[in-house]
Image 1 (tube, one colour):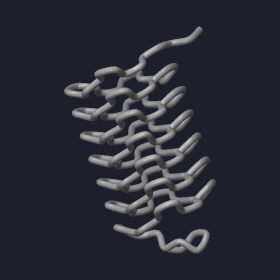
Image 2 (cartoon, helix red, strand yellow; image 1 turned 90 degrees about the horizontal axis):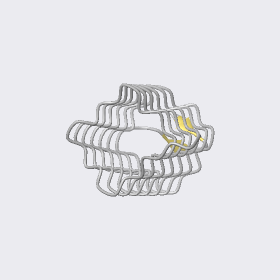
Image 3 (cartoon, rainbow, N blue to C red; image 1 turned 45 degrees about the horizontal axis):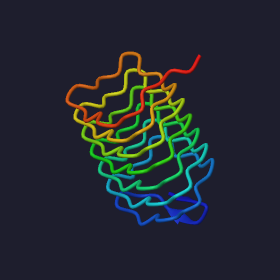
Image 4 (cartoon, rainbow, N blue to C red; image 1 turned 45 degrees about the vertical axis):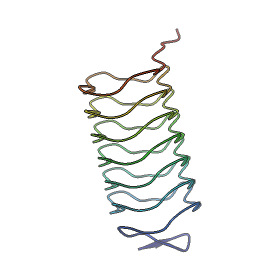
Length: 143
């Protein structure tokens, strides 16, 4: 599958790709390099991003519901307002990630590294945080 001229497949090199608003529901991008990619408002519901490199990717307001992000590297990723409801984030590295206002309801964050991540106003209802590293994580709720 090609979107905006980019080949969407497992292990794809999509560094810095502009995939703003792309329709990628159920796409198989396991092990893909999406470092610094723009995925603002992208539709990734049910996508397979297991082990993907999403360092510094912009995923603002992206739909990642029920996506498989197990072991994905999301260092300093911008996930402000993203929907990660029911997503599998087991062992994912979210160090320094911006998860403000993100929907993480029923997300599986078991063993995830959230060191220094900002979860201000994130919805964590029913999320599994067992074994997660929350050192320095911001967990504020603004009224």
